[in-house]
Amino acid sequence: MYYQSRNAEITKVTLMKRMIIAGVSSLAFAAGAFFWMGSGPSTPPALPFGAASAQEAAEVDTSSIVEMSLGQKDSKVSIVEYASFTCPHCANFHKGPFKKLKAEYLDNDKVHFTYRDVYFDRFGLWASMVARCDGEKRFFGISDMIYTQQKEWIGNGDPVEISKNLRKIGKIAGLGEDQLEACLSDTDKAKALVAWYQQNAARDDVTSTPTLIINGKKYSNMSYADLKVIIDEKLAE
Image 1: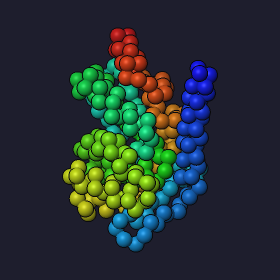
Image 2 (image 1 turned 135 degrees about the horizontal axis):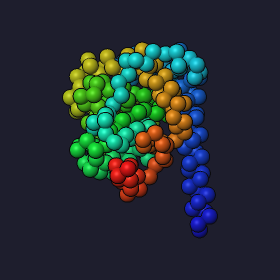
Image 3 (image 1 turned 180 degrees about the vertical axis):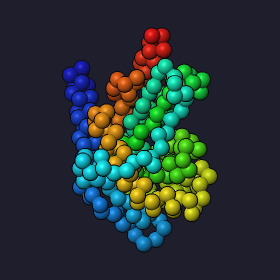
Image 4 (image 1 turned 90 degrees about the horizontal axis):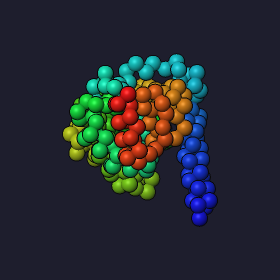
């Protein structure tokens, strides 16, 4: 039974790595192209899938992309999370361990936390553009809604319904119709986000989600108990 369980776990990790590599490849394959979902307002009218290569991604101006962070920047412990809005493991992390992390370490400025996007697919990109639509002001609140309702807004994978569901989340969070349309049709921002993701993932060797970078060291997904041990050890150093 142990070997069966272990083999299943290895298979899951391998599949996740293949997914993230495939995500980079599919985003890169459609370089410069726009994904048209229809003429109506029910889906984002045009979203570029990103740069064709790592070199082209490096040449894209990503200076407009804002790092979404919580806590004091000069905290003794720094955590960077790489996650995708369409990743079930990431949703589980944000519905559980992240809430405990925020209450115990972020709200009292013991730890500085930064969220960075990983894009497996266009739906994760759309979700990111909704979450970022009002800048830092509402990002983590909207992100929480997106992760909490992940199964509902993804549904059966229909792009039209996903677009409608993400718009609904944005409106409930306080975003206006015109504001959402402007955010979701901003192709320059979409291209910059994808390039920013590619640059970050290449630099930090991110091959699965969620990935945590704690004081510069990379960790894979873990329980909150294990995360707490690492944080407390680094706070005590």
